Length: 122
Image (cartoon, rainbow, N blue to C red):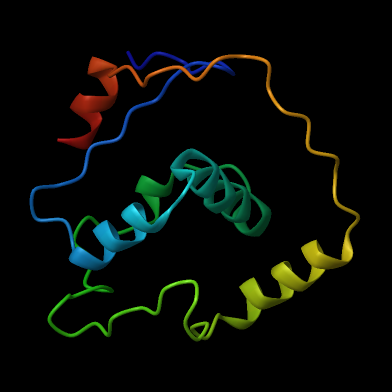
């Protein structure tokens, strides 16, 4: 049985050996990978609620095919077009007052790998 994740616990991620280069470019562009992934999760929950994506996404996806995909501009280059729904979410977030940022007193913890997570990626 899969172990329930608790706040503050580590999760681990593993890329595929055949990972699309654009996915790797995105991962390597992030200055805070966990916060970037958290943002994507928050957007998914806001749009669709809490659900198991594996029931909705196909195992074989062809959305990114590096040979057919354009190189995505970096942060200092032109911003790529964003879908209308995400654009509206971004606008709503910009209008909301920003929560104060409180630095964490906890030291950075090195990620640990969970065998259950690794099995789920296979």
